[in-house]
Length: 277
Image (cartoon, rainbow, N blue to C red; front, side, top):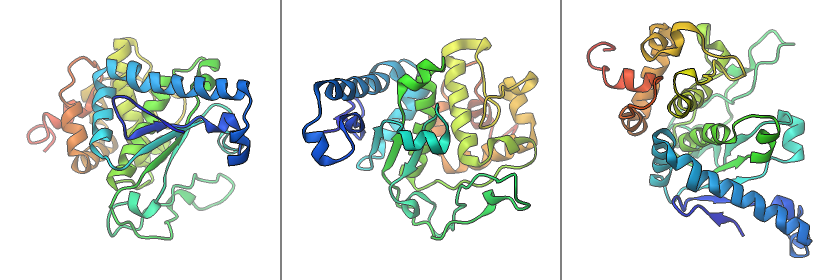
């Protein structure tokens, strides 16, 4: 039985993976399996109800997700099959209804990665459906212990996936490929998730925070580590402007945060009719 977050009841955590694969095996799970499942559920619930609400960035994101009820997020463990497909230390989010997660009337990009062994760029392949914009429930596969073992911050990884979940719940998700100076982000959805997670890292760890560049392990350098400097890049500015038009609720909320040295969302939103008009 999934556990609900106390503060965000439309986010649920299900550790049944540790109890066994099928319904029958879960009915006869061992004590050790029950302990593992309960430990997993508590770890994730603690992140949602204790760790993330301590910081304005994550608190405001969670509030936006809560407002999207009755649409839900279900968080379950990152599986062996996931590791074979996406790597040993990773997490991912997916909607339960692809058409509902995409903007109304839009045939969204399929989200395939670019295959280096082919001439064409598979990121530009389109999905086989048109979006309805109704918003979808979301599944996240995430295991905190994997990130701790790899000396990575589990809270940041969960926050990243929750950004994707919000977009799916709103019916705004479309993995438009990024190009030029922001090619390494792969698509606009990753750009937004990395941007919000960088804001969180900046708020939590201050001026020396590690801020990601792209959808990998590279770091922002030089003037890109400042709010105004980040927006001096024309591709960054264009993408932030586009996302602001789609995410007015989220952007207006995050723009109020004054405790993050790096906050291009505030820089843009608070000067969108003047400096960035």
